[in-house]
Length: 208
Image (cartoon, rainbow, N blue to C red; front, side, top):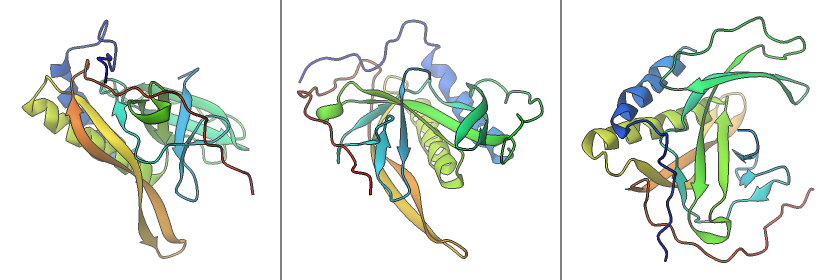
């Protein structure tokens, strides 16, 4: 064990400002990172990150940056991002121009946040999670609500530590639909202890 600053505090807003911003995330989304690895749950329910779809280590713990929650819009076309407008949740949703040419669904509402692995072979890795799916957005919103409630009770520990899991729900047309789940293990301070482990060989998915 070693004392590791989970998130740099310089330049961050006051923890006391978090609660109202996070509560606004649910309201704003109901109607509606360059250089950082992208985290996602794939179609078979595996959590992976990066261009090589490296699998997340089972049971690893991830600290969610409480100041990183964002909302906005994204436009996809032919599996490529044609446009993206994201802002912090303390700001209103960005105004939209007409969707880029070729956008298959126009502008889609998107939510996101940043996480940092604090245990296991990926310790120290920072990732960005963004989603347009109903289940993904609901998972982010539920995490934001839990965080806002925590900040209302104890501003000294505003960092949720989560494990990355999956759930499902039945869909009348698509059958069993997998959804991401962020299970909160504990809340820690911005300078909370994190366990560092030697970097082992990465787990790689093998394309079918």
